[in-house]
Amino acid sequence: MTTFVDLAAWLAAEPADAALKDVVQSVAATCAQISGVVASGALSGSLGAAGSTNVQDEEQKKLDVITNDLLSDALKACGPVAGLASEELEEVEPTGRVGGYLVTFDPLDGSSNIDVNVSVGTIFSVLPAPTDHVPAEADFLQPGRNQVAAGYAVYGPQTMLVLTLSGGVNAFTLSADGQWLLTHPDLSIKPDTAEFAINMSNQRHWADPVRRYIDGCLQGKEGPRAKNFNMRWIASMVADVHRIMMRGGIFMYPWDAREPGKPGKLRLMYEANPMGLVVERAGGRATDGAERILDIQPTKLHQRVPVVLGSANEVEVVRSEMQRG
Ligand code: P6P
Image (cartoon, rainbow, N blue to C red; front, side):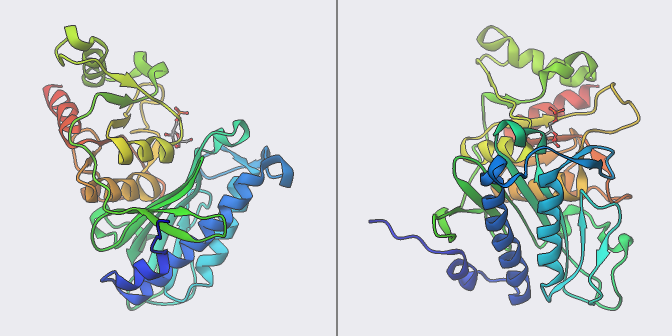
């Protein structure tokens, strides 16, 4: 019978600040709670629209609101948290405390999939808080390389928590009795892949480099890539990224001409940055097509960025196409 290390024991051995471990424990415990709420679905009356829209002008699902409240309440009660920011909240929320950490999160990513029972997830990012004042929005606008921890929970056939603190990337599976057990230590992303993830319905709106890259993949063995590619698109970033963490691949949500003023759909502070840290720590790459995601200096809390991430050598192929213009 295999025995597994639980999250508390793994954190105890992790060379990180005790206060940071408290923050991670708080997020992990809340994700375990969210797993139960998501799994109950219609039985708990938590499916369907909330009848409101968020700061992104997106229709909120009931579970967007429920999960946002669970995470906000937990983090406000967690001593080392000085402030939080959420995809579902227009403004940052200081806790009144000074020092410690800032947490940004997407409480339920992929929520358009909830009502059709497809995997969704929670994404979180932890940044250092200012040491001499109660944090304001400007204090959150740090480049992703400043993150001291990041990760996600994916609510799928298994509920898993994937996180990185000071070292590599480790994945925990939620047991029937609510324990996070270390089942996938030291995740590493294969540098090469033959699997791409992109929403093909936007093809006519892409810039030329993206169109050239995907055309090359679609030409298969007879084309410039000299190999056949497979395609996946779950429309839940957490699920698409998790697949890449487990078997390699490339995920793309590039700029497109549908809304030319928008750089992309995904948000920097609580989607691209945390996923970028996890992917890089597992040996992958995360760019906006050209520049490293973690080097982008944020200017707005809810700013969007184009995202290309996954197997290092494949992300480089896209970057070369972008350089050609
Ligand atoms: P589309 C979910 O709404 C999300 O923010 C990501 O999780 C996902 O990758 C993307 O949007 C899906 O977008 O345009 O394919 O529905």
